[in-house]
Length: 278
Image (cartoon, rainbow, N blue to C red; front, top):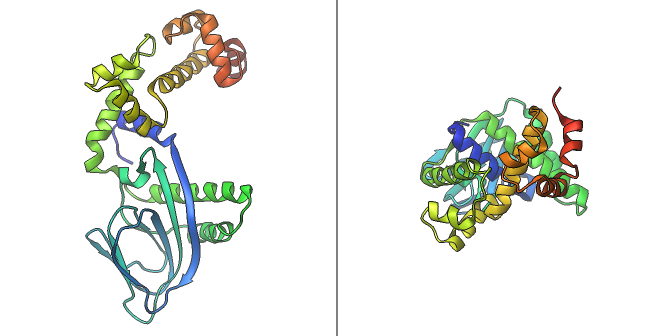
């Protein structure tokens, strides 16, 4: 992935809100009439090609995936597929969503659509497991399929160059500015009205916009950032709890202790005793 350090920070926060869902997963020998033209799905697709040949069009790219390749077809992009001979594809396929706020993960990311699979046995085993789990109804099956699907997505992104979609850069820049604005003021008693005014937005719209992307209201986000900063200071410095409270925008040590215990299950002193780097 190739974002700036600041953009990476805001994207890391967006990923905290990632929701993945497996819709279906199968192993299929494509029939001779395997064909659909110029449709736009609202879900992503992975194909793992085992045998055969065929044709895909994703956006304006025409592709001919080969055996041993993993093919990605993103949601909300016009696409087509068709056979090109009697030797049709024998392939694993799965449909899934990966929501980050109000967008699909891959609406943020610009990635190639085909990758040569280096660990074919491993990747094939993930598809095999997903094809079994999707037909099971237990809670354990839902947890296992999410874990495997997340591994598959991570594997794919590790194999390809990843960039933020150019059309999303302006919005990513704005989100980065909002994040940096908040993180530079953790020691202050900043209000939503102040945040909104700084970005020339109405407070109600700012709250809605912020929650859409970060998955929570701005004040809750700020509290989480403060707690993260408190944890860092407790474990990496010898500052007193009062000094840490002052540095992170809490009214006093009692206020810090109450919020910290609620978020972590520890008091600041017990957290330091257990986790401080020595």
